[in-house]
Image 1: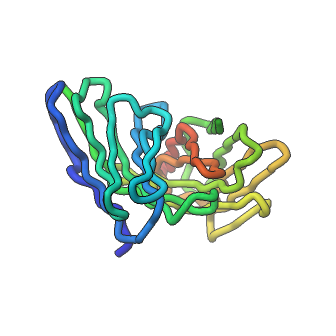
Image 2: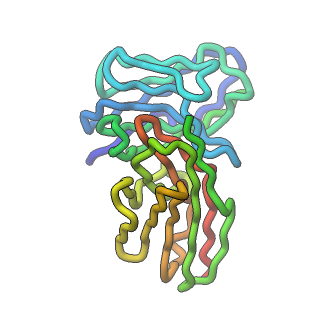
Length: 114
Length: 109
């Protein structure tokens, strides 16, 4: 089944404790992206990657890191989480750019930072 | 950059009625307009999309219309059913994709 898999689904952590949310896709998609979803703000892009070893900032990149060492994996790293990073996170992939491809989204990771 | 506005933020209809959600975008270079449905506890799922060379597209009970001149596009759901209850997002894309803030649709049985 074509899918984007992200883990964990739920995570509660303390301020400052480094964490990684994993994301993997099995569709051989070039383009991958991380979004956060907050009430009333919709989906805001954190980082994206157009291909292996190519990453770039989205609209809200502060406090996050990403890497793209393999085509299928795109982990999101919070080096020192803070309470304002409490949110619902989605990884997504699409075949390419050029504005003609839709996203496949993962099931989400609900992160709480206390 | 692109800015997408979506209205209304909440919409409640009776089962069997129609529902319409409207979006406007700012970047005339946008050429792809998908709509996503997000059910509780799940990620958004693509339900229909339209490209800028097309004015209308239909898939069973859902349809999308696009007015490039006015830079707005709409989602129409006819004969709504309780399982249509969800949050719907519009988006506009050239290379980057920007999402609207979402519409929570409730279909009352």
